[in-house]
Image (cartoon, rainbow, N blue to C red; front, side, top):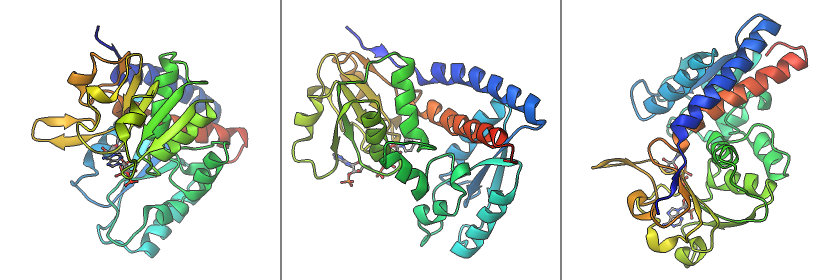
Length: 288
Ligand code: NDP
C-alpha cells in the first residue's frame, strides 16, 4: 500500500486563502498593507529561488515584498545600518535575510540586529531563546512548516516518538523544540549519531533535514511512520529530498514529496509570521 501524500503545494494554496483574508482584515483596520523586507546580497545567485518564492507568496496574500539588494561584499556596519533603517520603518512588519551572506558575516550576528518583533524567520538569538524556553514567538519558517504540515493533516504528535535528523539552527534544532512543545518524545540525530537507522526505525514521526540526497532508504523506516522530508538537493536528475522517495513511499504511512512538500509551506510561514507581527503591531496601536 502506498503512503498518504502530504501535499505541500495544496496546503500552501489553502493557507494562501486564509492569510489573504487576514491581510484584508488588517488593511481594513489600519489602512495599509504591511510590507516584508527581503535582504539579499547576490543579484542572480543561489538566493534567487528563495527570494522569488517568498516575494511571490507575500504578493499573493496582499503583502508588499520589498527586496533590498546589498553589495555581495557588504561590511557588517553597512548591513547593520540598513537593518536599523528597516527596523525604524513603520510600514515594514517583517525582515528576512536571504543566504548566502558576504564572506565573513555571521547570519546570527546579522539577524541579531533585526528588531525581534520583525524577525519573521526566527533567525535572531532572542527569538531562538524564547523557543528554547518553550515559549515560541517568531520561529524558523521551515521548522514551523513541519509542524503546520503535521497539524493540518491531523497527524497526532503528543506522546509519539519523533526522530529529527539534523540539528542546524535553521531546521533540525527548532523543529525538535517545537515537537517537544507539542508533547512528542524527541530524538535528535546528526552526523555523529552512531547508528542512524536504529534511531530512524523507531520513529513514529521522522523529520529529515540533513542535506544528503537519499540518506533515508526503505530499510531505515517503519510501517506507520509519517515522514517529513525537508531536504532540497540539486542533483543531475533534478531536485530531490533527503529521503529516497520512490523506495520509501511503499513502506510508510505518509510522506512529503520533494519538490512540493515542505518548501511551498515554508514560504507561506514567512508570510504568516509577517501577518502575526503586523497584527501585534496593530494591537499595540504602534506602527509596524
Ligand atoms: P545544515 O548543513 O546546516 O545541517 C545539516 C544537519 O544534518 C547537521 O546537523 C548535520 O549534522 C546533519 N547531517 C549531515 N549528514 C548527516 C548524516 N549522514 N547523518 C545524520 N545527520 C547528518 O543544513 P540545513 O539544516 O540548513 O538544511 C538541511 C536541508 O534542508 C538542506 O537540504 C537544505 O537545502 C534544506 N532546506 C530546506 C528548506 C525548506 O523550506 N524545505 C529551507 C532551508 C533548507 P552535524 O550537525 O553533526 O554536522
